[in-house]
Image (tube, rainbow, N blue to C red; front, top):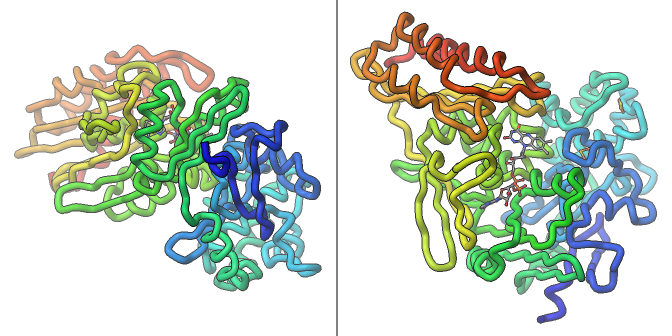
Amino acid sequence: MNASKQVIRFLLNERLVELDFRDHPELKPTTTVLNYLRSLPFHKGVKEGCAEGDCGACTVVIAENQNRKLVYKTVDSCLVFLPMLHGKQLITVEHLANGNELHPVQQAMVDQNGSQCGYCTPGIVMSLFGLYKNQHQPSSEVIKDALTGNLCRCTGYRPIADAASGACVFHGVDKFSTAETETLKSLDSLNIHKTHIEIHTSTQHYYKPFTLTDALEFRRKHPDALITGGSTDVALRQTKKKELLEKIIDISDVDDLKTMEEHKDTFRIGAGVNMERLLHFSASRLPALYKMLKIFGSLQIRNLATIGGNIGSASPIGDTLPLLMAYKANLKLQSITGVRFCRIEDFITGYRTTDLKTDEMITEIVISKPPANRIIRSYKVSRRKDLDISTVSAGFSLLTVNGNVDDIVLAFGGMAAQPARATKTELFLKGKPWAEDTVFEAMEKLYHEFTPLSDARAHADYRCLVARNLLLKFFEDSKGLSL
Ligand SMILES: Cc1cc2nc3c(=O)[nH]c(=O)nc-3n(C[C@H](O)[C@H](O)[C@H](O)COP(=O)(O)OP(=O)(O)OC[C@H]3O[C@@H](n4cnc5c(N)ncnc54)[C@H](O)[C@@H]3O)c2cc1C
Ligand code: FES
Ligand code: FES
């Protein structure tokens, strides 16, 4: 094997790091960026709070070259495996100041007394830095969204939000913008002649393709390897369940999987598109998806998590799944030898199981453009609005003809071992008037259609009540719309 394939290269702040895993037995290919940084001298700003993407104490910023511009993304470093840094710039809190001069976001934190406990503040500063680089004069909604993934239990967010609005007034200009041309040049040199990376240790095999063909070839050769996109689910298997991930195919840098296209009748979304990009794409095109993604995880999570990963995890509470059922989405499943399409509801076969063959991966999600008179809505009920897992989620779609239900999809998460449609209630409604009396009757049927679990999140009866009441909400929301 070509020796260079074992090496990853990235910029740590301005410094080039070339990491050959064979020379570093203390590092695994699945060592997280958080643990790597903590192992270095002078990089202890980053903290481990939860190691599962919830607290934001480990927030760092990753900059990458997109169309000759640096794009800055905040991420939770506890979820990012080291090889995911290849060809990028990792920016940590240690590097924000310019000599003795604080970065504008740091200065604003000082001025507004926003620096609270030493554990969370570095992560908060990095979120503010991400905001600074991406937003000019952000609204309070945008500021809150940027801080959703940084948990504070001591004091509150007001001075921090004030620091954000005070700092983000310079169009992102700072020492990083001054150095942009130089940084792009350095990143180019890391990405030139980019060929796949393979890291082998005595216990792990890590494959990192950059093209779809290479990804599918790895999949064919290593059917037992775990695919990872954003690793927001996969990393937890290591950090929380202490599993050794023996074989991984990391598709996070396969550009062929990151396309989003609008065609005459369809939207085609690459499986590797992250939730933050999808959020922006869906704003004017798929409003129900947009509404769901607005409360999906946090910005740090959305910058990593992919739509393919949400589907691939086949979680009973995967938020996009019921909605994709309502959109009647199709999945493009590809292997090195062929392509097939599968309806999303046929793809999910049980509790976290799918119809994916061992040589396939999800490469695209195809959503037909809904006709103007089809009403599609998403709902998420959770214990708190932000950064929480659904108790019950729903994707509903309705088409009426002359006031009668012609076609309806009532799909739920959190009501069964897998995201599922309320087919009996749908059948009951079909052909009937979309009117209060019928909906009340349907609600009673829906209440008895599922037998969900009781768990720490909610009692089974509560889930049934929520499902029932969401139908009423859907009915109320549909009033006044041209049916
Ligand atoms: C703090 C936190 C908050 C979260 N909030 C939410 C939330 O609000 N709503 C929600 O639904 N989820 C949430 N999640 C779960 C997770 O972020 C999502 O499921 C996410 O979409 C997974 O995407 P990923 O790219 O990170 O997947 P990964 O972790 O990389 O993979 C997940 C699974 O999908 C498989 N997979 C990935 N890509 C493909 C592919 N192209 N083809 C076939 N299989 C594939 C993997 O093998 C794995 O089994 C949260 C997670 C965390 C840690
Ligand atoms: S340590 Fe809590 S989000 Fe990473
Ligand atoms: S800033 Fe750390 S708990 Fe509030």
